[in-house]
Image (cartoon, rainbow, N blue to C red; front, top):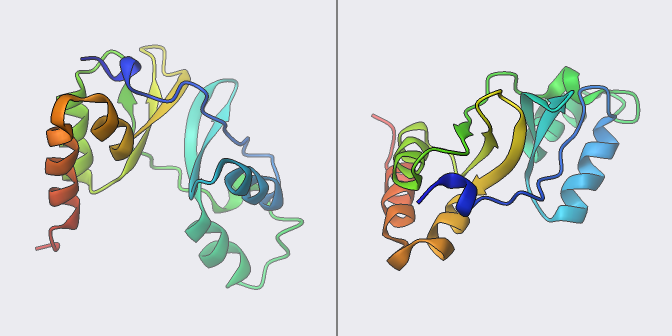
Length: 140
């Protein structure tokens, strides 16, 4: 099964030029803790609720003025829409992430995939369980 078959194609994203407040409102509205950051449909990073707290609020920055591009994580794990879900789940476990942006082979953002998506859409949800076990394993 390909990732495009289980991913959420209705993925909402932020721009690096959006305010942190805009990103927080998007995450609240979508009930998520992270949002991809894209520019011209190209994935350029991820912003999380933790980024907002640690790199914004805790540093005393005015979140009405701070742009997403200033606090986002630029190094982002992603997968391709034509990858097999078993490979994506294994990568999520190895990288210890619960969600991944999905891009096409031109690196355009086309969706998001989560462990929940994998559990709901694959028979028995075994690959999601294996990935979660890897994520939960203490770092060596």
